[in-house]
Each structure stands twice: as C-alpha cells, then as structure tokens.
Amino acid sequence: MDTTQQYLYDKYGVTYRTAKISDILFIAANEYLWDGSWIRPANLQQYSCTAIFFTLAKLKGVRVCDIPTQNAKWRGIKKGLQEMGVRCSSYTQFCDFNTMEQIQQARYAWLMFAHDIALEQGV
Image 1 (cartoon, one colour):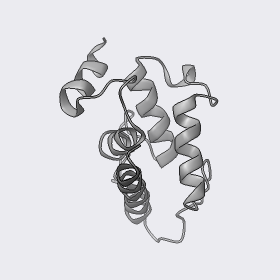
Image 2 (cartoon, rainbow, N blue to C red):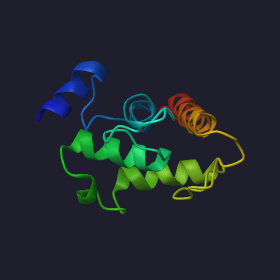
Image 3 (cartoon, rainbow, N blue to C red):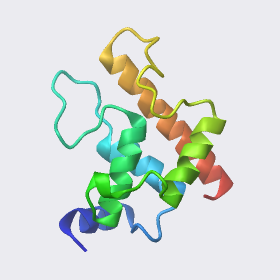
C-alpha cells in the first residue's frame, strides 16, 4: 500500500477493493475536486468525472492513465451519473453559472447528490 492509499484508508476506511460507489463519489468530491479558487493545485481536478477517475487511480495505487475507461467501477459510476442527467466528459455541463467558483460548487453539489443517491441505494 503506497502513502496515498494509506492516507485514504486511514481517513475513509476503504481500499480499492472495498470501496463502494458512494465512497468513491464522496472521496472525489472532498479530496480531488478543485474548489474554483484562483490557482488550481496540480493534485485537484476541475471536472467531476476526472475527480472520480483520479480517485479510482489513487485507491488502486496506479497512474490515472492506467485506469482504463472500461474499468467496472468507472462504468457503474458513469452509468449512474448519466441516468441522473449528467453528461460525463462534458466540460460545459455546468456552464450556466457565472464564475468558476459557482461552476465548481455545482460540480461538488452533483457529486454529493450522487453520493447520497448511491448511499441510499447501498452501492
């Protein structure tokens, strides 16, 4: 287990193998989604789907490019988000808002809403 995996396990009590979809969404929103502040740190992601992908890679202990788009956990998350009306891989999903902070808050709200739905469904 590398240091990032250990950090996520210590903080959230999950590993790649044990993480439910709700865990992945929560970690993506709270650890890897940029808040829209003026400067974006390299470890934070602008897009919610990228934050999910980044979370999967960190939990698995691999580079982001080593998580294939056919990853079973990613497919399940993507399908659920699409059923809720999110256009995954669409950078314009939340562009109705005026500022980057508002756009990022909308992405955070969507991730947390999806987390709540997944939690309610037990996944």
